[in-house]
Structure formats: C-alpha cells, structure tokens
Length: 424
Image 1 (cartoon, rainbow, N blue to C red):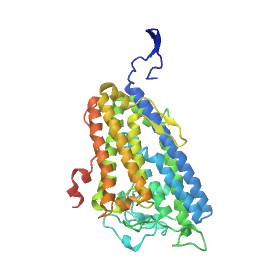
Image 2: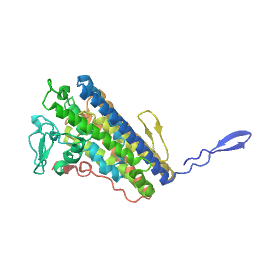
Image 3: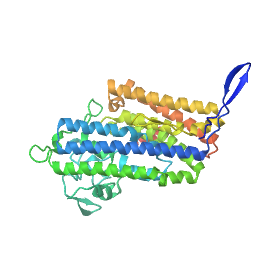
Image 4: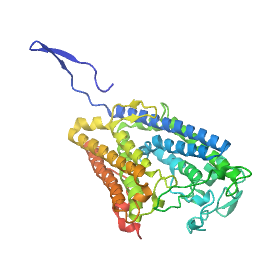
C-alpha cells in the first residue's frame, strides 16, 4: 500500500476531529508494478473481446446471412475498445512495439488479400503484390519466387504473407485485415457510407458472390484465430513472470521513461500527427485508421483514454470494474502539484474533445466526412482534438523534466513538424 489508511484521533475543544497523516508518495517501483497490472487487465480484456469476435465470425461462416455478418461486425467494433486503450504501451515498451505490427498495422494494400474495385488500380511501383489477391490465387510470386498459397492458415499469413517482399503495406494479419474482410472497401470517399461487402461473399457453393468464397472464409478464420493467439501471447508478457513486466521491474526509473515516452509519442507523432493531422491536411479518407468500417472516431477516443489512464493509473474494465493504484500522477503531485493538476486537466480535456468528435460521428457524419475538403465545421472538430493532444504533450515533456528523467524523445510527424513535406 502506498497511501496509508491509518489515522490519529485528536480531541480539540471537546470535539473529536479526524486527522489524516500526510500521504506518502509511491515509489517508482510501485508505480511500474501497477502500470503492469493495468496493462495485463487491458490485454486480457482485448483477448476476451477477440475471443467473442472469433465466436461471432465462426457463427457467421457457419451460416452466412445479413444478421450474422452484422453481429460479426459489431463484435469487431467492441473488440477495438479495450485494444485501442493498450496502444499507449507502444514506443516505451520494446516488446509491445516489436509485436504491435502483427495485430494493428495500417494502412494496408487490400489488393494483396482480396478483390478490389477498378478504381484501386492494377499496380504500384512500390509494391509488386499490390493486387496479388491471395484469396483468388493459390500461388503468388514473392521476391521473384513462386509461393504455394493453396492452403490459407495462420502460419501462412504470419510467416509468409505479412509484410511480404519487405513492404509494410502488405498487411495480411490483425484487426485491419479482418476489418477489410468483414466490410470490404469503403468506396464512398468523403461521402456518407462505410464498406458494404455482401454476406454472400462467404456463401460456399451456389450463391457465392465475387468468387472464391471458400478461400475467403478460410482467410477470415485464419486471421481471427491468429489475432486471438497473438493477444494471448501479449497477455503472457504482462503476467507475473512475463518479459514485459520484468523489463519494467529491473529498472524502475527506465520504467517511468517508458510510461511517459508511450504517452508522449502516442499523443503527438502517432495520434495527433500520423493518424489525424495527415488525413486532415490531405483531406484523404484513406488516411483514417479504421477506414473500412468508419469506426475511426471511436478508435481515436479510446487511444486518448488510454493515454490518460497511463498517467492516472486507472482503467475501467469491460465488466465495469475499475482499477486504480500508484501512478505517475502521484509522483508528479508530490513534486509539483500545479503541474499534476495541469496535465490531469489537459488529459481530461482531450478526452472530452474526442467525445465531441465521436458524438458528431454518431449524429452528423463519419470521421472520413469530417476531414473532407470544404467541410469547415467538421475540420474544426478534428483540429480541436489534434490541438488538445499537442497541448497535453507539452505538459508531458514538463513532467519528464520535473521527475528528473532526462530529455523527452517522442515520435514526431511531418504533418505537425514540417507540413510542407506532406505535399512533396
């Protein structure tokens, strides 16, 4: 326990008065341990919801219909809620960063996986597999060599197809590959509507649309099975004997740097920059994170919630229970209470700005419409959220200095640091 629950009772003027002793600041080791506890809870919830997604996909593949496809899509959206809150563990935790591309890499050249609209184009100078369409082709050429793709398995996706040809856009696994297989391409640009893949793309035999329904089903099943396995691996990394937890325990000061680096990098270069400002500058819906499902506003919200949680040591689990404990906020409050209040307020403000965005996405227009050219009001809502993230990053930098942790080294983004480069 880092906050004492003992108290002294003094009698003053004949009245009993409760006198609480000064609260002791937690140690860095205690903060690191609780941070790992929260990480474990978040990845466990991510695994649980991925299991629910797997069950929904299995049910859909067993009996494809509008209703079962809708249920699978809903399960995918639900699974994003806890997972997005884990993204703050990137950047500062090497184990997470090395693993993350397997489950959440984006954007992806979807022509690698399945059929695409003619507007997608037939080739790309940077990617020989731009329209390889593995679902339609039991053999593909990778690095000039024929590769057997006749049987689509989790191992084939992970070991052969993911980043094939050393091209990052060849995303064959994870949430976004599954998203594409459930929704299909969003061909609406900055107009209303998400992807609209028909359920008949999975009807094996008579009634199959767009061909290769058996292989498409095999791909979707392999992808969700792999997602569950990958999340199970990450849960293990945060358990008591896990490598991620041990890395923090071995050097508590480095653990503080990891926590704050994850917060600052996710706030600034990744979320404010790469995921939001870039798309806003280009007015390009292809730059939105959940581009097939139009779930981007929610993903951005839960990323922001995760950043705040990393500072406060809190988390609301999918069953409604709440975690709290020793936090970086406690450490900062012990040294500079005003700075702690400042950052807490900014974090809460950013979450509120994201709620404004998600409310708009539910009642007015989707995120890809908000960033559309000429949409001044929608653009302003997105820009306000970006500004909040950038502003909180400045306070995170001050926290690093206040805790004597050295110099901040956060991820940057040309969209924020050198916007002209985006158009070159």
